[in-house]
Image 1 (cartoon, rainbow, N blue to C red):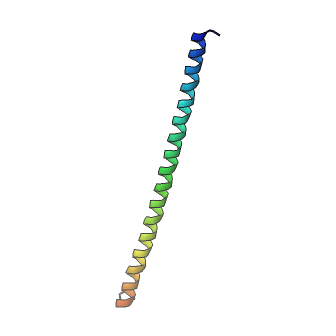
Image 2 (cartoon, rainbow, N blue to C red):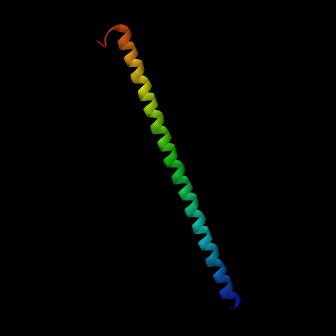
Image 3 (cartoon, one colour):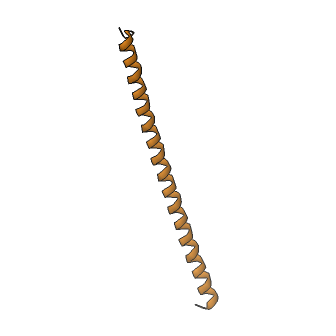
Length: 66
């Protein structure tokens, strides 16, 4: 393998490694986004449940729940 072929091989290796690193970064970002989405959905459900509980408590206290 002459110098030109070796340089070309090294460039190909570097390109492949860079592409793999890029895929890993994208995967991590995607996983982080999915996790954030799930956290927000869970928080929203908790807020909704607390609001419903508060509304029920007001109805019970004012006698509107009968």
